[in-house]
Each structure stands twice: as structure tokens, then as C-alpha cells.
Image 1 (cartoon, rainbow, N blue to C red):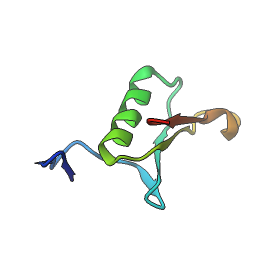
Image 2 (tube, rainbow, N blue to C red):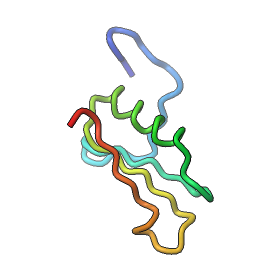
Image 3 (cartoon, rainbow, N blue to C red):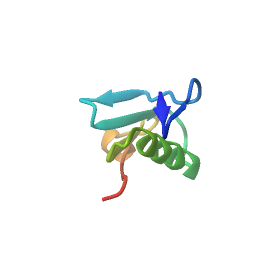
Length: 73
């Protein structure tokens, strides 16, 4: 991956990229912490994407485990 003319070999591991537009970060944790949001926002900035979804599968209802994050809207 290239970012501002610098090749980045390691570190970026998006879970799912949908249609080259949305990054989905998948977790299964008791609580979503700010570091997860910062990681997803970094992925969005590095790839110049606008929309990210943080999905936590450790919830009773999946709708309660999905959080949307936007970049530069």
C-alpha cells in the first residue's frame, strides 16, 4: 500500500472492504473502546474512504453491535 509516496508494507489489515467504498472492521469484545474507532478512522484516512462500519458480534442483537464512522463528511 502506498500513502503520500511512502510504501507501507505492514500494519494495515482491513477486515472487509465492500465495493471499494466501505471498510468493515469486525470485533467480538465485551465493550467497544476508543482505540477501535481510532483504528477504523486511520484505515479510512489511509485509503481515502468515507464510510466505515465497526461491527461487534459479542452482543445479543446485531443491530446493537454496529456503529457507523465517517471520514471528512
